[in-house]
Image 1 (tube, rainbow, N blue to C red):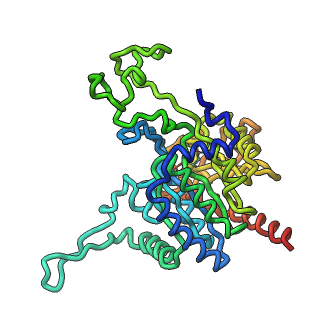
Image 2 (image 1 turned 45 degrees about the horizontal axis):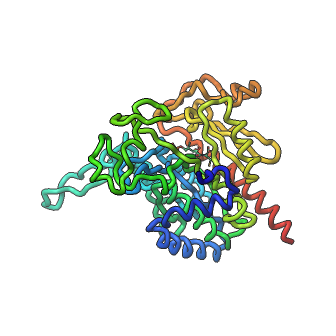
Length: 395
Ligand code: 9Z3
């Protein structure tokens, strides 16, 4: 049996993993776009952040009909990208295809169909048809978003690149990190994408659609035999003629090792996210990740409270710092479990609840404060400090 990627040294696992797949079709086009984008901002001595966003798919077949996916809509990434742009960064937005995008996210959300923002103006000048206009109540917000969007576009501040599968994500991340080398300490990595930890290696993947019933042997030339993938019970010996599908996944190599130690520019800052559902684990897991990969910041968040609180885990004091949207400023329209805010911190003391007041969301605060508007300025302060340190060391 060949060794699992999880048992190999990171560099070896990298080469085995990347050798299994052809590079994504869009990669060379993306590289050309990114190279031009990065050159422009190197020239302007501008900071560039690579924001990753959305979930990755794990295909079950090479000619993919089915895949494993996750919940991420890309809200964190798309929203953060806007606040980075506001802070003067240029943004490479590496996102899951069709997930939320900076600026257009305000109008592509499913509860707010973009058509609901529009109206027909009354016909004028003898014409039977009025022009399509933005409804009065949305004029101000839409003008504001439109201005920011156009500014980013006209000034080449935002590059949108997409991926779908976890393998595509890996290829794109590696390529972007290497291309960002000329940026040195002006490069920032903000890894908000929800990347699958498990995948099916190409060598074990069915070529064609996995069948849900037995097919005659003469049709099964290169297909995975039914008894390799179906078991009647979840037992070692698969039973034939059953409809159960057992999926055997390998660990995805720990790309953060390679990003921090190999691909990313010297002096750059790497920020990863840690997602948990058990409040007792969050801080511990975030700190373990920071120690394991020796990067600069892990932002921990819980699935149920991620829109209202995150924790910054850093190698230096204060080591653990919570950022919260005050209760009175939380949007009413966000789903989540407000009663769980503070739980992941409370495990270590009572500090979490101290920030919680019982005020209801204020009237007129339907939109609320986006937690990314608090996260990004704090992160930029850390990036400022790191750049100052690198500059001083270079003197
Ligand atoms: C996050 O933790 C993001 O904040 C969310 C954002 C995915 C929770 P939404 O798209 O959600 O706004 O709904 N991203 C990183 C999750 C992740 O896969 N982290 C890896 C891990 O936890 C490490 S890189 O092991």
